[in-house]
Length: 267
Image (cartoon, rainbow, N blue to C red; front, side, top):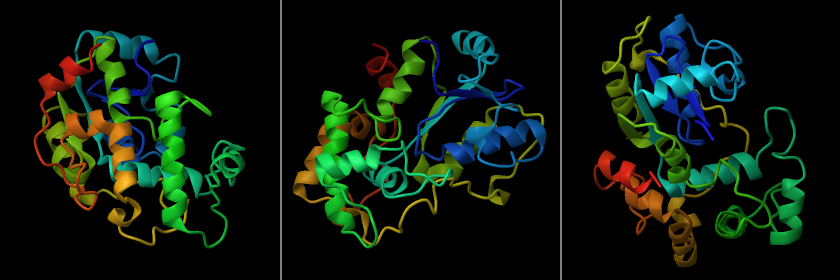
């Protein structure tokens, strides 16, 4: 299986396990800058050089050797499950992608037919999101009507593949405290080029893909939606210390225990 979703700087200063919808564009651009002194011109997900990625066959043996030897500082970044699944809906279901098309081609028409999800024009954001949440639960719990997509599958699932194949995280930080977490990473490594986090733009490649959210986060989650979300993402809430009882609180309520994460996600 190897190390899917893993990126590494060309200088091998740091290794990052991508978790979709968790500031991965910003992190990738920062990694690229620390090697090259400039940001990648475009979406970092499209870069075919300048950054080692598991998806690039030439990078795989280098990433594998590095990670198995715990040679470089390895980290990842996580996000509140409520805001992450909401972001997935607005970006991937309600939005138009970079290529001008709907995400995954016929997915949205399929959702309209099977779940009554209609995201055309001025739609009822709360009602359509709750139907999407039911669909997301079905993909994750029952793998029907399709396997779960990486953008709404659990964060612990992404994080675990790195551990299960012999990797070890030196740090896991929260999107909600991005600058503090990323600064800790940069303070822990030697990079060819220095970078000031306060000076960099935030690379949110999904921004503008979908309609603007018209309501506060908590309005999308009634009692049933809260329990559905906890059913889907219980391990994410527990391991990464988010508050499942209060969707309005996007901040963590405790510290992440790296030993616990490694122990619970190693199998």
